[in-house]
Image (tube, helix red, strand yellow):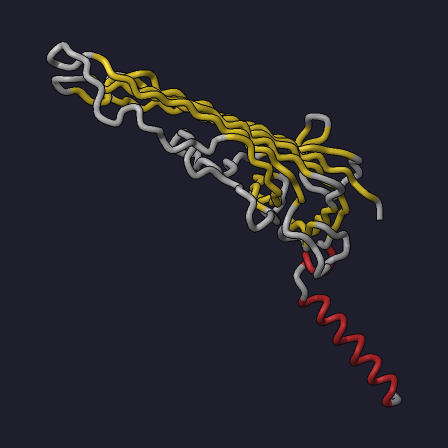
Amino acid sequence: MSFRRLSLLLALASLVAAAIAQPAAARGGFHHARFLVKFDGTVHTVWNLPKYRAAQDCYRSTMFQAGGEETWHVASTGQNRVLAFTNGVATQFQFGSWTMNDPHAAGGLIAKGQVNRSRHQSTTYEAGACGITQNPLGWDDPKPPMDCGTRLVNYDVQLGWNDGSGVKLTPDVLRGENGIREKLGYDNCTLVTPDNVLAGSWPAVTGRISFKGKPMKDYWGRQKTFTATGHDSWDAQRPIETVIETATTTVDWKLTFTRVKG
């Protein structure tokens, strides 16, 4: 046997041994698919604190009440390219490019949001324990203005997945690239939410990809367009003196995947 033939046989044997040693996922489990993805979501919170007696002395009873709401709407902009891929173990997403390991890939879906927050409150005085009403000194002094109103913010939407298949998604809406001097939040416009909802953060709500109302097991089929939707709502009641403060937060979101050949 010639040296060259022996070398070829040894090289072939080495390749076969390497293939056998590889996990099944690495040998044949790799899949990828290209998508254009759209996101649209809304978070709405409303709260109310009825009028109650916050303090009392001989000269006055201090009465306080407050309430407000917030509507937060976020929608993707332009064409958001998403590459879904798996090695047979876990599904992952690359944003902004269909080229694997593209160094110019984005951090998430590019989106814009509008947040509108309002609040009302009032302090009044009624008869005190001695049956008289006397306003305290400085009761009519100007109060610091609240900064409620509308904020326009750029966001990155992450498609957090709950298991290796990636079919259950929990979107997370994070602040994207915004101007240095842009006002993105509120300094003096308190929003009361249920205990498990942090004001100013997108609540975690999970949905599953589906096609024509039927759950999908992965991303590698032939469905041209499919969706994932999420919905949840929380209520809170807190006793304060003789009244009950209430708060409700509702979340709705939808992801639309459009398959792109290639």
